[in-house]
Amino acid sequence: MILALVGLARAKMLKTIERLSYGLQGTDEAHLRAATLLRRLRASGAYDLADVWEPCVRAARRKSPLKTRPFDCLIGESAACSYCQLEAQLRLARWMATEPRLLAKPRVAVTISRLAWRREAGMLAFDLEAARREVREVLNPCGGQAAIFGRFEFSILVPVEAARTWEPHLHLTIAGPDATEVKDALFKEFQEIDNRTVVGVNINTPLGWASYINKGVGTRRLPFINHNTGRVSTRSAALTKGEDVELGKFLFKKTVYDLLFRWGIDLPRGVMATQRPSSGA
Image 1 (tube, rainbow, N blue to C red):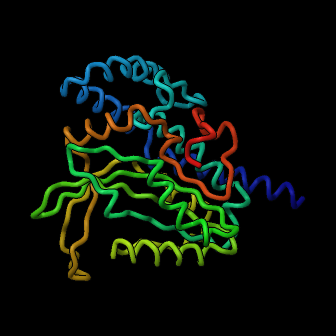
Image 2 (cartoon, rainbow, N blue to C red):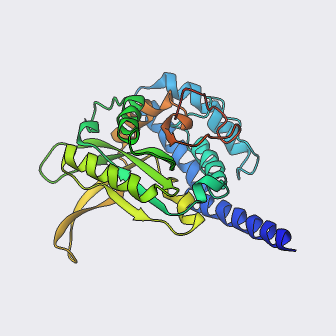
């Protein structure tokens, strides 16, 4: 009886995760995103990328809504493909919400964005593996038994009186007995290096846990005055045509799996269609 109730609760949670994932980026949005990027690539003269990707977009439209698992991307689960992002988002959310090591308590989340990772707009060239190595070097003495999983996201900052810059963010989820100590060590190390705040939050539910890293790959950050605090904050906005094309070109030859980060935990085969032992580790 107890096992049956546990199984029923898990099935209900997985169904909720599926609705959550499609709510974050539904099929309609995936179609719109794909069509927009394809049109912008052609307008910018990137005909080679557009010609490769267009058959994939047409194939996905014939399967609307995308209920077939897995989606067979003709360009190899590219990080620039909105359909691949949608599929990967669902598989990762299901895995994260049922993986025992990631559900261990306490659970915390950290977002790291280093000043050294910034790149001027129009010059987006970012070494994901080098950034992963920097974080691993900090984790080597303090990672302990924690299970850490995360994903890179790219924002473009639009300051009032300065040049636009790309700012990569690494969103990390940390679980296990050492989670709080690991979070504190990351805070201390990166705040001393960059003298900027590392964002950290506690996560209490599996759904919140799974959704933390299932963010969009690229967004625009616009400044505004927060009247509650009197400080400058930022709000999200859609990328401009030029920014969208620049990020699309950068991500096109990378897979969704290349954007991941993990520590102390293995990603099971089948969670990511294009995962390779050397990537995301």
